[in-house]
Image (cartoon, rainbow, N blue to C red; front, side, top):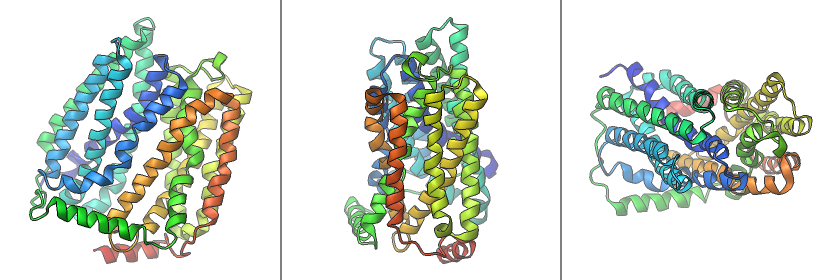
Length: 430
């Protein structure tokens, strides 16, 4: 068996990079190429769709080939999609071309997620799975910093070198990512282990899968507080769904448009480095707090954490700070709060998924999670362009009331989330 250190870190780096490319780097690319905020948020929000409908095709993956085969094949397709984006950026059909390849990247990445997470459980012993869970999360976060931090800064430096040739600079960057992903494909083709359990499922038909899927759906919608639960999944992050894409555009938009006018290098440091560090620290602290005292005790502090720090964008839209220190502090506060508050959301998904079909129910919950970001994002840019950045951020703060309302309707076991309860549930799964 291959040493897990040779493949777990690189596998989850490869899982995170295409996601951040589709969800964040694409925003900066399209903004610099002159697309309006309305079009940027509309087109890129649709790219959430593969993650929304992922539970629909995930059961069929096991019917064809092994998870290892799916991983290396999807990495090759993702590398080809990066190359397609690079090739089409300088062309006259850059919007249609790049969107086509971003769609290919999104579907391939969602399929890669399914295969990689399944392979993680097959390729490692139970002890190794527990040990490497933090390692895989760390390298996924590193992919985020590398993508929206380092790569965006590289794009800005290339624009300086090539005298502000934006399309050419971004094309070179994506060719570089293509080479990196082809290298990851070659590496994983060689280093990924071949577990005996990793085989295509036999004796399973499409009819059987559909029967199981219908049973999953039926039991999912028969759960207690199903309406409240789904409303919580869809609306808890509504303010962040509106804010997430527009906040990035605000940071890099020109001063005369009401933005802060950050360069790609500055944006890469502010949002892609400081922001991600704040998000990670908030998530870690949230997990520690909930595991000690339970979700119910920390629910309202987490609701405040995920909503109230959004006010920093109201401040920045009116104060228009020009010093990077102030901007970094504001972004760190907002992202730290989001990381801390997001813990409540993820724990509730686990809480709702308990019981029979817990894995399938959790997959459906994550589909609602992706939908909760997709729907607000579709019209966020149009709303911002209609009312301006200042009023838009005020509207985001008004929508924080929705988060408070849906949270107030929840009924949660006070013991859920505590270390003792988690240990008992783990023993049951074993």
